Image 1: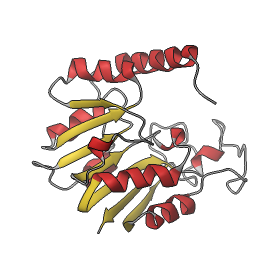
Image 2: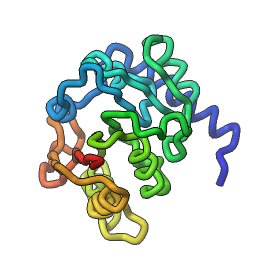
Image 3: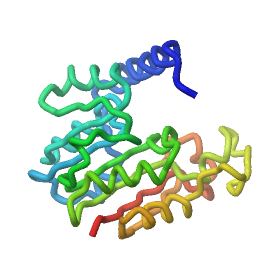
Image 4: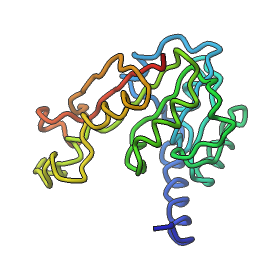
Length: 212
């Protein structure tokens, strides 16, 4: 179903409010900062960058960064704060040709990015097309198990329900689309998370893969 103009305006408003709420905050999770190598002069593509907090931090770490998001309002907010960064409005599942030329050293995609991905294989094929040989994918995302519990830590659905996206499916798609899995880490809830009361449920994961 195609999004309506009303839905587009609502989505843009959400991004605008998020930009105001996150003003001054840094965007990269500690696990990602720890995993990153030296980014000096590295070409970095940040997918689903939203309002650009993490994108700006990647640039501060030395990367030559391009931020991509489908929301014009989100990118407008990012462009106002960081005009020296290249911001591209595009569907991350259908990246424009100028990005799919195998020139990036790193593609980073953070929390919430997979929620909007309808076709995981198509999304990953686009990522592979952007990476040079030896280039890296770093994906930090909510753990699929965590998405199956509610705010009271009650199971609202089975992890194995038809249509659910499981961690094994994500890993399989990564490998199937031409990347070599280098590492996969799973993390418990943060101390400030509403899931902190039950550390048995993984909250996030970090996947590192490479084009060879």
